[in-house]
Amino acid sequence: MKDTLPTDLRNGRTETQRSDIMVSIDKVRAVLTGLKFGSITLTVHDARVVQIDVTEKTRLTS
Image (cartoon, rainbow, N blue to C red):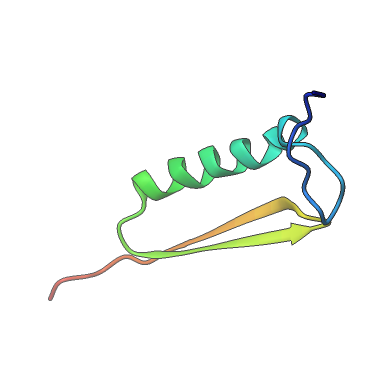
């Protein structure tokens, strides 16, 4: 039997070729660990994360 890797049907890439996804997840995880209040926006082009925008809110106490 022939060994085949699962293929992403949208772009024909195999799982080993999608290491860019793991890199993106690691970067988002790193941002999340330092973010108390705010938002993260991912910009995706051609099934790849090309930009990560972070907006951090600072809560002021009176």
